[in-house]
Image: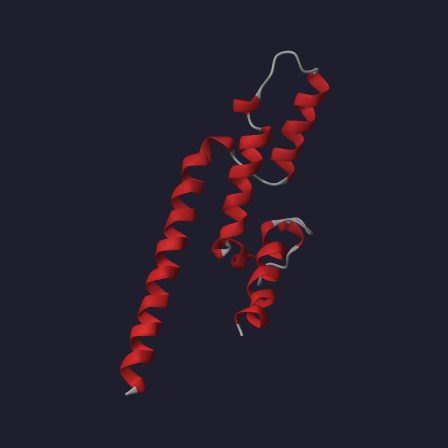
Length: 112
């Protein structure tokens, strides 16, 4: 049953994380969903790790650095907020874990 429910969780994550369409292309009434998708924050951290200033190499041409900056800008990532992405990612894990525990406890109490 979990395999059947997986696309309902993963496809919106992919859509709202910015893999297929940019966040600006999502309609305003639906754009709030990106803020509760953990994949968005994980992708921001991965992009900063791969293309951020911490991966700067002076032997690379300036064109490569410009491409790295454009990737960061196109994904609407602020390199100074890397710590915020960590905190939000951790908060999402804690909140959804607490909600699942509460749902299981409520289900167990109504089962008997």
